[in-house]
Amino acid sequence: METNSISIFGLGYVGCVSIGCLAKNGHKVIGVDVVQHKVDLINNGKPTIIEKDIDTIIEEGHKAGRISATTDHIQAVKDTNVSIICVGTPSTGNGHLNLDYIYKTAQGIGEALKGKDSFHVIAIRSTVLLGTNEKVGRIIEEASGKKRNVDFAVVSNPEFLREGSAVKDYYNPAVTVIGSENEKALDIMADIYSKVDAPIERTDVRVAEIIKYVNNSFHALKITFANEVGNICKRMGIDSHKVMDLFCKDTHLNISPYYFKPGFAYGGSCLPKDLKALNTIAHDAYLNSPVLESIERSNQNQKRTAFELITSKGRKKVGILGLSFKKGTDDLRYSPIVEVTESLLGKGYEICIFDEKVNLSNITGTNKHYIETRIPHLSKLLKSDLQEVVESSEVLVISQNDERFRSLIDDYPDKIFIDLVRVVEEPRNVNYEGLGW
Ligand SMILES: NC(=O)c1ccc[n+]([C@@H]2O[C@H](COP(=O)([O-])OP(=O)(O)OC[C@H]3O[C@@H](n4cnc5c(N)ncnc54)[C@H](O)[C@@H]3O)[C@@H](O)[C@H]2O)c1
Image (cartoon, rainbow, N blue to C red):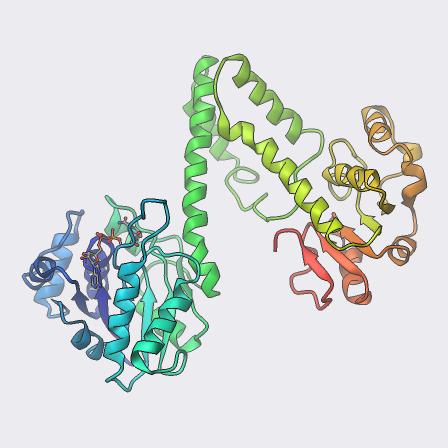
């Protein structure tokens, strides 16, 4: 691959770190900013920000002739084959992002591309809204008269660094995310980041656009969750740091990908009960725990979402594939699909159920009591023959990840399938719909 030369738009926090670190990795980089003072600083070998190690990195890159800066965006685009947008995206008064600087930069890049014949990559490094990649492409097409994905391509490339450890974060991100419809542009960006010590994840534009929001919302959730646990522990005379240290040692269920697949509500005899217990401890100690309190509400909402998805199909005959709260058990207590089934029965739907582990004559104790109060005539609805359930239903609701349910989706193209657990990645059946995908 030819060597890339890069123009960086915006010489603030992200732009300054990018310019220094890319130069340190051997790239020739031109910084562009509308503020003359920032351009002068870079041209004197000085950073525009205060951050550990950045002064020596900029000084060395400048001395080696790899770093320069300008206010002339037209020349900067002409002299490079990649432009990375790092301009600011401040909040508007009503909480939205103000993307004016992004669009202005796109306009400028488009004008510059008018007089350029070679392929150009525009990477959006700033934090932007969904759809910005598309809009930046449109602005550049209009301003340049060139064709997207032929003459130029736009890549979404979110930045994950944190101020205070920006240089370290730049070189050691968990992943480098690049999203584009254009493979050539992705190859060029992958080459630029080849010396960064992180796996390069090529993905869809919209996945790349939303990931930063999902990441940061989760980080905020982690902090507030830990703080609520801390408040409860303190009130109980328990050292919360000992608790959370132990919590983090469980890398099977706590700090792991487990439970991170969007899908149906949780249920069973433990999660609802133990969550309620912790909330009760907090409540009895007169503590507010809004995060912990809202978990159950969110879970109820997911059952409602499943119910509405089923009823939205406008068919009365519904087959439920899997009734217990998870595959391989006959425990029906607090199984979320039992609640959805109960609501469907209440609305007059004709229900047929298949669950090979649920045998009414073997169910005893609290499990028996629970199901008898929820679905009193279960014996009439439960069938031991899967085929019978499929054939007598118009809509089939898959609530357990079972190999046999998976093959039904392609075998019965005329049936409507509602998948609560994603038994298939890419179904061919056009009547298939997932709960959260
Ligand atoms: N600061 C962080 O820790 C951090 C981390 C990750 C992502 N981000 C995101 O990266 C983006 C940049 O953040 P920042 O902290 O570096 O912002 P910043 O405000 O420090 O810098 C933005 C720079 O862009 C310049 N600029 C504005 N319009 C321009 C234009 N038309 N052409 C050229 N330059 C222009 C400004 O003069 C300024 O120097 C934002 O979207 C931010 O949310 C920031």
